[in-house]
Image 1 (cartoon, rainbow, N blue to C red):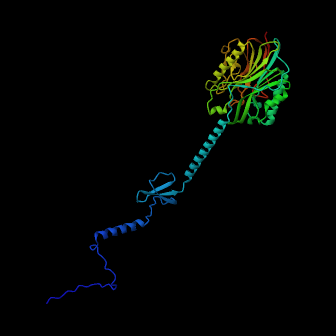
Image 2 (tube, rainbow, N blue to C red):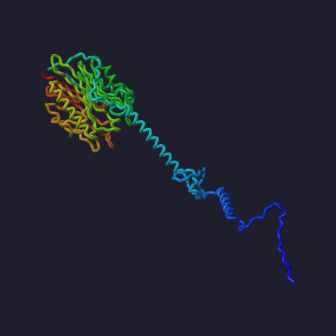
Length: 427
């Protein structure tokens, strides 16, 4: 007899509970829904980023797309939708120093740009010709066939061409005035006269000289006005003509320059001043030209200034006038014995001017008995100064020279010596 085998069943005590479905019992739709639910569950879990450098301290994180390179960030791909996790890390000491250097450089660059803009807006822009104010009245008129005395002197800012305390500036100006009184000239042609400059402690040297020369007529032409020059600060300076004669007019004539922006902001606007003085019992004029020309030969400034001056002198002689140009030419005339004051290696060379450059019988006058200029500082690795011949006169052929002297002051009051000319205007 065969036995009947019975299958065992697990009876759920809760009759309401539906039996679990097996994989085979699921429809295609149910399978899809289950897969989506599992994906959503995985998506909601946060995945910890892999720290490639566990020694780096992480301050904050940010998820972003299309990652870019940053100097102070580490980037990690988080595995989803091309997103990256960006970690800000603490900079190293070297990086902090380099960042500080860059910030300082940018600040300096910004300040320099602002400074250049300020100097450019406020730069001295003289016209080609400007009328000058004649202050005071002279007590005399020049006469033909009468000896006249002229004194030309670059007074070196009252500081001997460097910087000085206010007491030193005043002492130097008093020394200049003492020398002038000993000579007793009819005409003064002065260069490097400061008015409101940091290097001369803002002493108005022109006003100081005016007050000490009563009974004279004077004019002043600026050739330097700037708020700042490296190493000198604020500079206001120019050339002054002071005379016992009464002039009819005075004007400033700009000289050409090869300096371009921004270098033009820190260099002198070279000029000459022309004072016209009527001559007693004559239709002709005594034309005084105060000169302070270019010192360095960069570009063609010196040559073009020489040519401009030569044309001005020629025009005045053609008009029949008596012409005396005096001052600091920053050049040596060809009739000077240059072997007396040889130029040492690496020292400034002023160059040479020749009489044939002027023609029309002009006389180029320098007295090389004493040097007219001494360097502001001693030659490097030496206790000696460099000496030059750069101050003198150019006069028309209708004037007779009585004497010419470079006065030896021992450079006590300036880095230049005064040059005294005595002459007669020929009928």
